[in-house]
Amino acid sequence: MHSNGDVFVGEIIGTAILILFGAGVCAAVTLHHSKARAAGWVVISFGWGFGVLAGAYTAAPLSGGHLNPAVTLGIAVDTGAWDQVPVYIAGQMIGAMLGATLCWLAYYGQFAAGAEEEKALPTLGIFSTIPEIRVYWQNLLTEAIATIGLVLPVLAFGLTKGLGESGTQVLVVSLLVVGIGLSLGGPTGYAINPARDLGPRVVHSLLPIPNKGTSDWGYAWIPVVGPLVGGALSGLIYNAAF
Image (cartoon, rainbow, N blue to C red; front, top):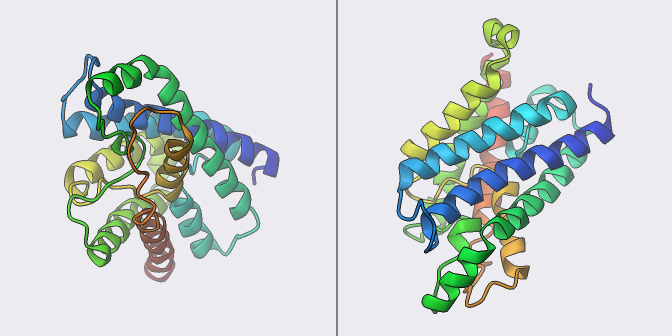
């Protein structure tokens, strides 16, 4: 079992790397004066997958590399080990906010140039999710289903002896995240992680981005509640079936 201090530091670092890569690829595809401008959804999906790869491998020695409250919740529901859940989630939220801030700094010039040229530059999608069709019950269901598609396999991977011995679990999970983005990301932008959406949304609301628009707090509960429901259901399903 990892110590509370290691868990806290590991989740901050790992989640910060995840969001730096994830928000970074969204910025690269969205912002004017970016060499990856309009590169498309496939690029975004792989960018987030590589973010999981880098963040989780970095955090794994310290915390196991959850990087996601839905994963932490699913494991706790399955195992009954709740003591460190608040530590994990606190680290994940701080890390997500740090990663979003680092993304803004990395693309500072592009944010500034875009604001000068596009008076209504849509920046929220760089940091957080926005549904393509805003129907809350449908958006909530999509996020729950997509999160089950993440957390249930993550729990099952722990039973696959070869993955554990080879150390390739994180690689497989990273590819899983790419697959979820390609297959289930269309309706809502696939938060599948409360910290991934809420932390950067808070940062978006605070950053001095010119003409940045709304942070859409009316929708903000969906990418928090949906993934938590999906994570809890995954833990229950895994515990009952395996």
